[in-house]
Image 1 (cartoon, rainbow, N blue to C red):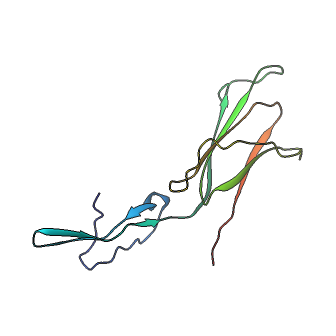
Image 2 (image 1 turned 90 degrees about the vertical axis):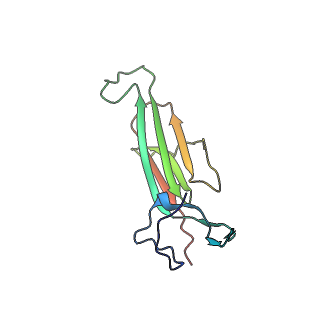
Image 3 (image 1 turned 90 degrees about the horizontal axis):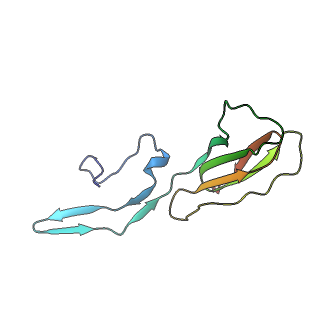
Length: 129
């Protein structure tokens, strides 16, 4: 995919976003040949964002004794350390990573099948020199 830019050899992002993460390389055409630089991976850092869903769905009344599943999808770079915890301060609940790839945006899915009110929190370590 070509990235639109002026012909001065610079690629400038006036407002970088997470969607800009990916591999970039410089190419040049000269007579009948095309030359390319080696690739450069641009990794954009951003804080965790959450998408929480519930089964049965939100709006469906919950009654004691029924099974309830909470699902939280987390997107962050660098990867965050997410934890489900109950509002009354109980010990954090163990969670499992569903997907994480070093060269892609880390995405996590956590599912908990427990009673009570739960809250999902995440922290992210930013290695900024």
